[in-house]
Length: 135
Image (tube, rainbow, N blue to C red; front, top):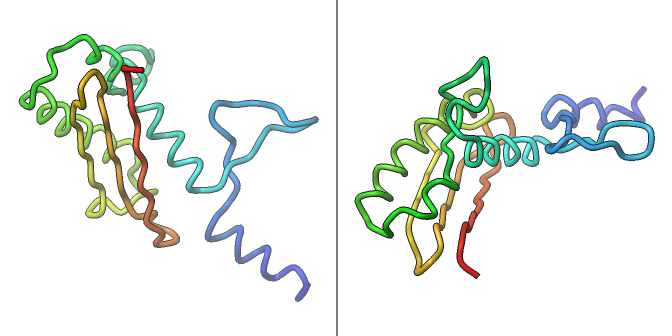
């Protein structure tokens, strides 16, 4: 048992999750780390349109719809607040809510979203940049 003690400790602090999107590796489903799981949750919030999920009609930010909106600061400010609220709800328990940072801006023909947070269980800081549109 002492040989495998480090595996048990790792499983408690960073348990395996199903990978997003779901896929099969060999004969079993692909797994993700806690950080990979949270990133998958963020992608689901960003790219799911509100009303798309039958039992959670309020879920999602639907950012792809913003690609054809005017590239204006007021729009990005509203989007930032809405996205921060959606992410705080979707990531409850996984992310320290005080550490969640969301930045939305338009760069030329691109929508740029930066999301930073601290994983609650392991205290590791994560920072992701998403770009939509443009070349």
